[in-house]
Length: 215
Figure 1 (cartoon, one colour):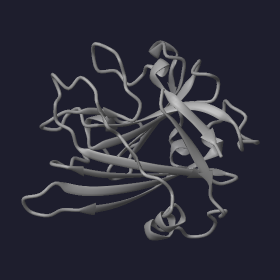
Figure 2 (cartoon, rainbow, N blue to C red):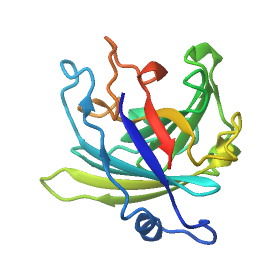
Figure 3 (cartoon, rainbow, N blue to C red):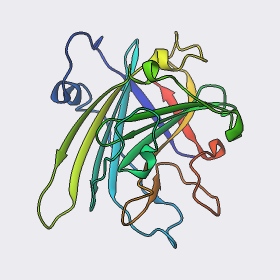
């Protein structure tokens, strides 16, 4: 099981925010790579993806950096099938993987957030109003003949994790995983930070979450 420490950010993230300002706040933080190309025999394409994460008193700040051959951002409404687009995902559990939140955003900032147990019949989506409290900032680069690059920074209010107590985070150990997918891209792929040992593609397997510690 992989482990990482999420470092505190000395900012309240008030006022009007922008991509460069937020990127500077985590500029010295460590990049982590999504180096597991799960189900590579069927889906060998491997985009280059890395992320960094930190937290304030009231938010998580999560930055992804992606280089891939195709960009797709078809879905523009909350809780649509964003995993079919160029999509990054963060799953997080505060109760030892009994329940978890799946936070999924495509490259144009359309979000989907669900919560429940690993039994998908028990899972429910958060409301549009709740999901839209997550601020997403995207930066896209397109160059002829090379991979396209895009970066996204998400400011995720701790209030999104409404079924858990997030009042005292420092030193707390939880679990989660980070993903990149694109089910309807010309080369579908299923990358993860912590390895998934399952015969078929499935991110909803919290037994394969890594350990996250609030430093």
